[in-house]
Image (cartoon, rainbow, N blue to C red; front, side, top):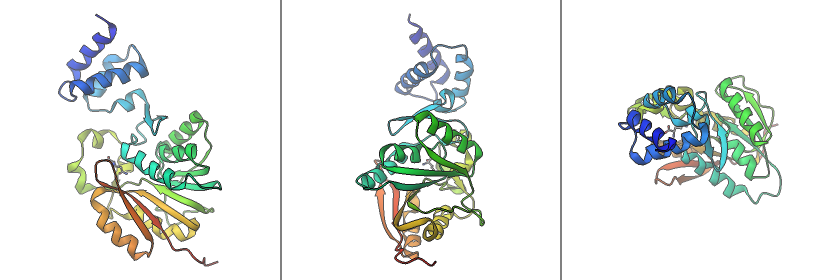
Length: 270
Ligand code: GLN
């Protein structure tokens, strides 16, 4: 019997109530590729059977074709977020000049680093979490990409970002506490709440970025957001109140997932 088969049998025994046979085969493949046969197998199986995602155990994932380091300070990048990146790249790949892009709530840096990799662009990445900023910086170094990182709270009244951007991109927390019941337990238990949930106002991050857009965007600049599939109507009303032009995109699952907003900054007040 091969060692691989022995590992599969162990995985199956420990995890059969959590994962299908196909998922188990994938898990074994990922595990052996990333960690090989090692003395932590039993410990890792205990973490997996507690519902911890494999990416936190291997410390790695792939996003938009690039390898990223992840840990408990950051969300595991989602396929929907690859679609956000794809929309931004499709819109801007013909740009003749280097774009300045700001990523708010960068987490692992998967969004900004993928954009910098594929566009003529310079990036700034901010996050309220020091742990996330460290992960983003590590990923930038590993990918040999340059990004300016800052630990900042976008909601803080005295925030100072003394720069203007062509693009602001963000996948902010957008799940209200009431929506927890719809989520997988393993997400709630293992991924950082700070990256997922909003307190009272589920649109607070969008409101804040719309408010700041005139001071943060260059003329002709625009915003791209990942959104909660259930908040499209509210966001449409909100973005309309700001008088911005906007487009929504669905994800592959036919869920409203991406909002592009373009403020009419024709003249600036300074
Ligand atoms: N889409 C993510 C999830 O389902 C949430 C991402 C976010 O809150 N920005 O867990």
